[in-house]
Length: 182
Image 1: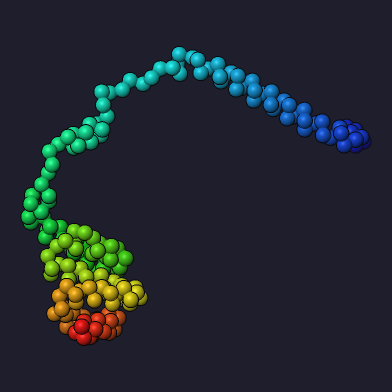
Image 2 (image 1 turned 90 degrees about the horizontal axis):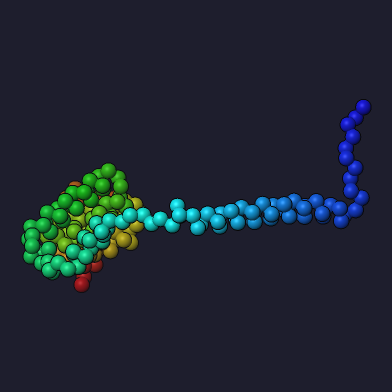
């Protein structure tokens, strides 16, 4: 003998009333929960404010900086800082280049500390930046960087081992030729 199913409602109106009664129950439950939670808001537990210190340490530091006397520019304070920072930046950029992180080398060698260093440091940074652009197939940027080096120092040359390189050798030769035509 098969188990019998309950009889189905005969009309579509009966089908519509079943979800409506479920929705009505759900609405009643939600309203009851909201009422209970609203009553908790008046509880003393929720009205306590956390104890605060006199002032936040960072805020105090900011206020102290704003009220402090003006400092001397870094160039007057530490005259040897810029060349040291530039040399460090150049070494880091060359290390990134040698490790094959050409985009990282470009970012590091284009940093403010390197570009504010002595001319020799800037020219070395520019050279490795150009090499990085050439190695990654960005010959237009490579050419622009070589042009920049030649504007800074018209006598700028690549080392003998770098001149014949198949990627940047021809780009540098065109830049040099263009600079000498000016």
